[in-house]
Image (cartoon, rainbow, N blue to C red; front, side, top):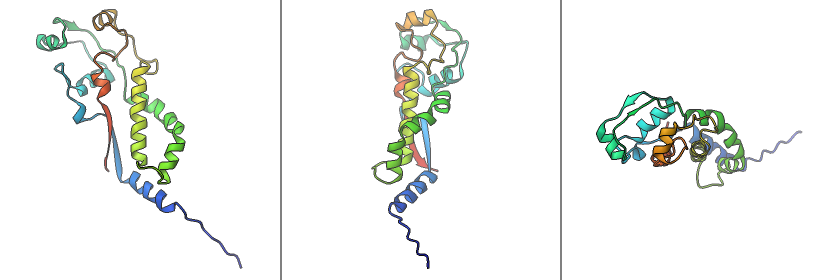
Length: 172
């Protein structure tokens, strides 16, 4: 007679974490509570113009005044993806680098779940894009823009867009 013994220690924690993942959705990016800016735009609009490229467009004298600039026509804003491309190209590797933390979450040994860990890794990936000029893919600032900003780093000016990046776990 063959006797089989299954050790299901930890199974409930893993099953619970799988249920949590399947019943959750993760939002990453500029969330409504972080959308306001002090220069007349919203972080979502500034992000959209950079994520997909924009222009040429003319801003109003009032907007330029709030920003501390004289009224001027802005040329083309090149595409500088800080969300899609970094997440598509780098999130998988960053999740793999977080394997031990993810294992602890799946086993129920952490106070946060897998969706929160992935949200944290995703926001850090986006922050890394800001630190590395889109992992080296962003077009440099125009010399006039760099002169006005006092920096040649794309998407680094007031840090309002960068500081608006967050994540939220919501029911699926």
